[in-house]
Length: 324
Image (cartoon, rainbow, N blue to C red; front, top):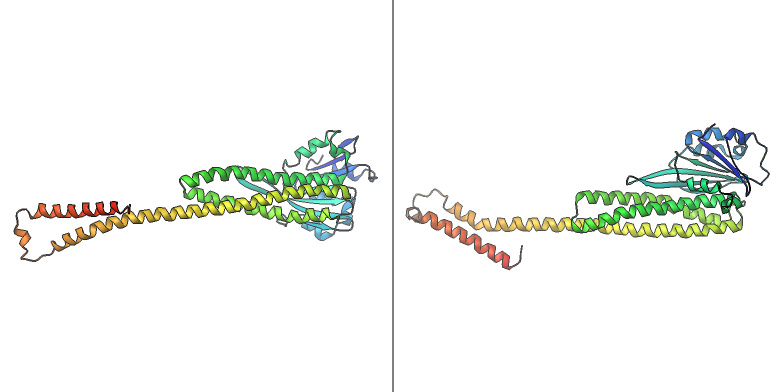
């Protein structure tokens, strides 16, 4: 049994799991059963080419199924529709992105994942329940459920990223560090990846809503408006957090500049205090033979007293000016 390719067939009363070979050799679907073929890895696409439905697929599209860096899109052909979406989740603080290809035929829905995942586990559990609304509907509703699940995962990714940004925001305002700046840059990159995956799906949903795929019923196509609303919410939150991250990076740079200015101020004050002291030391360090102060008994302690008095006076002056 090829477990990398899962075939599920169901009606409102029956539910079957089959192997790919069993599905290929069965009698043609008369339209009463919904068939979902789920491929868990790109390496098994070659097995799909034995399906009768693949006779209608253009060879260029078959080769494109193996490409993993495609932009999310929808192609509508005479006998099938081809979707490309991005599955995303956060693993140990890092964004994990993989491509999901969907081929929708009139009698079959095929999903092809880049590598195994658990994104559709809830859908599979729902299919086990004969009373679930998913079992009462056709494959167009199955497509709707899959797309809705993908967009819900985007919301979950945002929620997990939000926890990170909230923690860093508090720390950034207290004691900004270079590690936090690097965290902000990583977060900004994750937002950019999420935005690239989310934005094109807006066009896919709009085309479904406007009835470009004839074997999606008008009633089910309107369900996608709800997904579109959720998608716009995700996009709004992404824009909001991009602004927050940019603001936090500006806060970090500003705090870094302020800290540098404070350091330079202290160093400048120290240098300024030592300027007259250096002048006095340099003056009496000259090797002239006749300098009256050299013969004075208390010249050395007096010179120290004058230098200390100058330093203390300048320190008090700077302090009263509130320069530090």
